[in-house]
Length: 148
Image 1: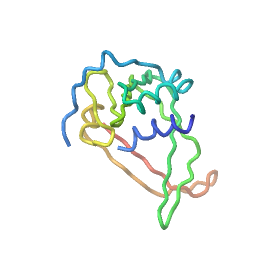
Image 2 (image 1 turned 60 degrees about the vertical axis):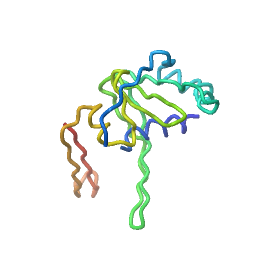
Image 3 (image 1 turned 90 degrees about the horizontal axis):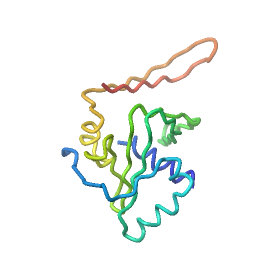
């Protein structure tokens, strides 16, 4: 169950059209804690073609992230990093896929980077990689991802 929940959360950060306005007032909203405790109950609705469920991740929540990278030349074995959610986030789990919102009015498909940028107000971003060497830590590859 925990792996399933983490996969859903990780998918959010895997990231065109504009974000969709969807009225989801009649869809049950549960906290991430309730979803972790009773996820099978909520996911069974998806199998039956039901309305799905909205999972609320409150601002300030720490969410573990699973990071997997497997390539011919390199493989990443990440320790369990966490993200801290800085604003309320809502995940609308439906039989057709996962939508994300910060206000439960404007929704983005998680696989649509243009919609994700609009929902999270991202204007520009950068990815930097380098090699850091210190006596204390030895050599390490440093990866910095920033969005504004």
